[in-house]
Picture 1 (spheres, rainbow, N blue to C red):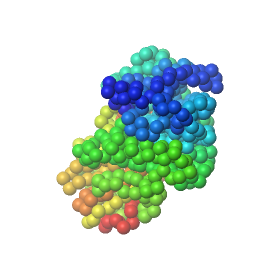
Picture 2 (cartoon, rainbow, N blue to C red):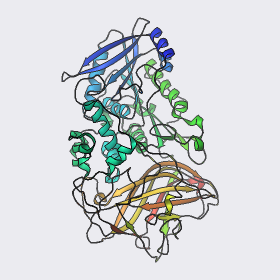
Picture 3 (spheres, helix red, strand yellow):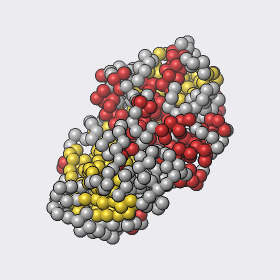
Picture 4 (tube, rainbow, N blue to C red):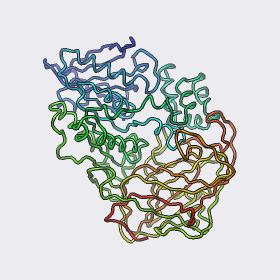
Length: 570
């Protein structure tokens, strides 16, 4: 997240507390990275807080936050290669583990260094900490990745569909900033770029030239060696992490899965035991819905002090748990509007419950007859709709990064569309709490050789307000594996598993569960053109007839992680 621009008063405070050193630190290949070192005026050896970022602009942190003063640490801010005033060429994710390792090695050779260092940063600056931690530098005693991915393939191509609006807009902005001295691509232009076909030529539309990393992303729509080069070796991580994420951040899954990987697989027992995770009602850029969750629930109010205490404690004594009174997981229970804790994720008392889809063949829109309950289906009519990629379902809330309104929004107007199948439960007789991963098992067919299936979980209040909780997508060609592409044959009926990501919500008594099924979520994800053509090369699009089955032989259902004591009768 971007920090506020430093005020004149704060600069004066920083100047009175620190000496500013500017260095060009050499990397192993000779590239030099621009680095600002805020060295406490008090002589002696100091701990270090290192932050590396490609966003070296006035809106991003260039000096220590005043809260860092109490840590009595050297604060180091470095621009990633090819950004800011650093040398080299910016290619997302490449070189970051090497460059962070080389920077830590340089710090270790300075006479003012105590020998203990922590990493700090969010988003891209959070992601690069994972690769650096896996190098197991001796000086690293802890790191604090916030709102950050780790499994890059799963985050660029969730369910096999490209996270289009984010990575086209962000990628082109970063290329322009690094090479054309112009990083600003307005939201309206990002939408125009998302509409550009073929997808591989978005770089030409945005910059007038081919962008190497964009071409590489488009050429690699499946999990393969290209993405494997960025994988994290959890077993080599020897330092604990304080992980921060948000329910309405696209990287929510990453936060919780990184936490689980650390607790189970980190190469050091203290790294496993001391790692914590905090998940709030946040988007990638903070609290988008204060009217729902309260102004006091911002990341700054909840997460900042905890993360700093985590770093402080480890720099003081890395052998002692820095947060002994804090549970491994702290999470915000949507609906109940309160913080909860757990020893594991999902919580120990979470169990999967199946909620089956029903209708008499007309679940189209919120005005249809789609039902959702615990009874398995018998003989029922299937539901059909037409997916028209020329008029896709628009993205409405959720983890929508890179422009547009995101977060938790009323879906009731969107649900009037006939190309959305809507399945709604009866009002609950008591509160129903869920915490964990939400999934949908769907039996469906399509007239197209390739298409998409999207699902969204919604909490419906008695007044009809329908708030989105989490959602997911699966591309038909990746229905069996994200490593192998398999096109559909002649309307075959297939089983699809849609990962709708993690959430925690209390459906209050009187509220209803709702599942939306559609075939697009644009511009968040690229539109499937329904042609089966090679990904990214296609400028043509076709309509597709989609069929969803829910009968005894093909019982399509929603899987919820229900907290056992709250199972309601539907």
